[in-house]
Image (cartoon, rainbow over all chains, first blue to last red; front, top):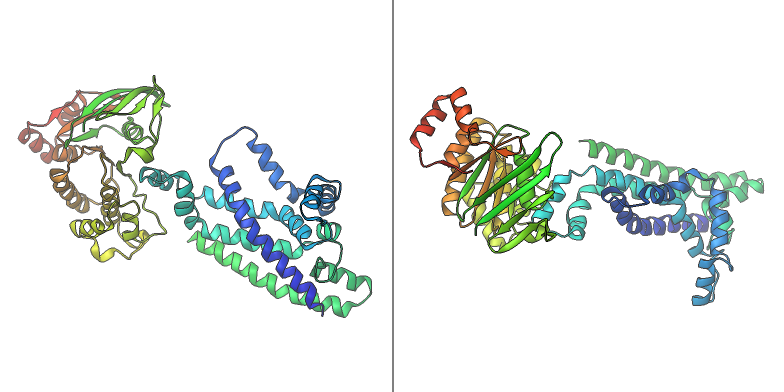
Length: 219
Length: 237
């Protein structure tokens, strides 16, 4: 069994989840509570990866992160390294690919909070930032946890976008989905089956957790 | 501190146009039918809504002035606000709710003793009754050392017995308070019992005849008795 691919998959899912929770929370807050010009355009842009084929996302990421793209060029100038075919590269791709799955449930969860709680916090002297950390976040725990699980699962299942941006370097960019694909290509169904089987219980347990969180938030 | 307020604003069904003042240590009770603009006025006092025109002066501080474009944020007004349907923070227990913005956390214990909810300090809001929640909400507002206390129909969702008890506690609180209190209700008995001054608000305006009309139409024994017994109650307009 390709333990290394499973390790890279879990590491990628974990790093993506942690980064996205930090990035998505303020974005979701902005979308939930503020009105500004171009809000619907920004929102559609954030949700776009959900509506695009992974290869389209992968193609544009190659352009942006490649040696001639602005991100790839800037990274090359700072570190002397390439973004493509690295773990960092597939992490960025995974973040872009999964961002709607973090923002959407978080925004829904923030919108569920009674506005009077925020008004009460403001009257009690809390700034908007303090109210975000002391009122919104603690009252959106189930929504944030659901977002984290969705992102984790979605990152675990990514294939096309990662293959395009990262290729298949063992221990670096070769994730479980790519390892399964390669094993099947080589007619090694046993190896493919072992990796596939190891992914199912992880996904199943996380889905059970999401159901539990949804039930709890309905109580 | 004296409050002088003058607000004009366009609401959905009528224009609100009101001016009043409230002296230090006084309790003004705003009364009137539902949907008459009482809550809007109290929200404007708190800075949660912005009037189209007007001024709000607290002592020598200008909290709102449409001409000079002054609008002090609710955070900086340092007031206490008890909402109609107890907006305690559901993730905190009663003690942490009351201590949320307390100036001195030791005072929270004293307030809990005063309002007889010390035994509930570890309970979450969903585990206590409506009356207990409102007692905690009052403690939360008082622990901040407010310069002005706003109460927006705080007992409207409670049963008659609990209301009566809380009304008594509020009366005691008022006698020891060094700040003005503005209390919104549509209950005449409550208004007559608590108020130093009554402000009848109907369709966004002060209607000095509303109390008399309502009392003569619904002369419940208690209301009639109190009205007769307490001539000190003056209508402010």
